[in-house]
Amino acid sequence: MDEVCANCGKVAVDDVQLKKCGGCELVKYCSVDCQKNHRPKHKKACKQRAAEIRDDELFAQPDVSCYGECPICCLPLPLDKSKSSMNTCCCKLICLGCDWANKKREDEAGQDHHKCPFCREPLPKTREEAHSNYMKRIKANDPMALCQMGGKHYHKGDYEGAFQYYTKAAELGDMDGHYKVSCLFYEGEGVAKDHKMFMYHLEIAAIGGHHIARHNLGAYEYRNKRIGRAMQHWIIAANLGYDDALERVKKGFQRGWVSKDDYAAALRGHQAAVDATKSQQREEAYKEEIY
Image (cartoon, rainbow, N blue to C red; front, side, top):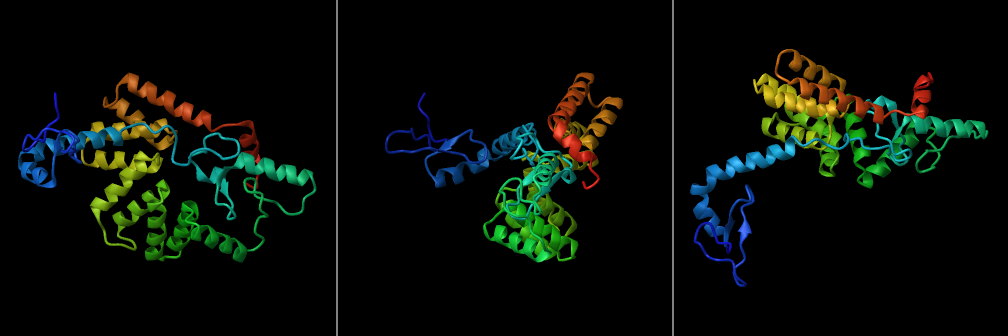
């Protein structure tokens, strides 16, 4: 059957191009005017379908957390960022196992000054040199450097500066940036409180694999008595390896909100995610007191 404009019934032919409704993608229109004229009839169905599409995207399980993989050993990075390191030369998040192994090799070779295990640049000797490296990476629009600088401003109490850096990182697709921006909108730090923008950035971060953002979405739904949606969020976070979310799922199972099969699947998913971040090299690094 030929495709037709939902408003005027004009058939799609060579000289008539139909465009899908951007909200629901259920119907098509031959012009903006037709879309506007049809809006009153279509509004309810459009909103319903748009919400369904958004939920499909929101509740999809990310393949890996927003931290991704170590660029050297290619194993998933731990959710605990204290078990990873970042040097100001390249601002790459590297697992402590690879960092430790690199320093061990250099020590055994008698090298006096360590180099970055990723880009092989000498590590900075002073704070001034490290700051200069940060600024170079910021000028190059490195989202990790922008987030780090946002954190420095935040801890100094410069919330407006933090907001600027975090926002720029978010614009470049950094999920940590989106999460931090959501927190600033929620607290009204450096920017006016805005619930809509808080939720927007929190959802973007969660979709991108940010485990804390996902966990917080679950808490938000729980406070609003949407228990089923809350449990869905916590199961996704648990499958990323987040312990706090697994504990929430456990309590949901005990109260009858999560089925036995779903709880068992969450346990398996959580353990698989945790195991994927393990290696002998990392375990040896964790034992060293310097970390």
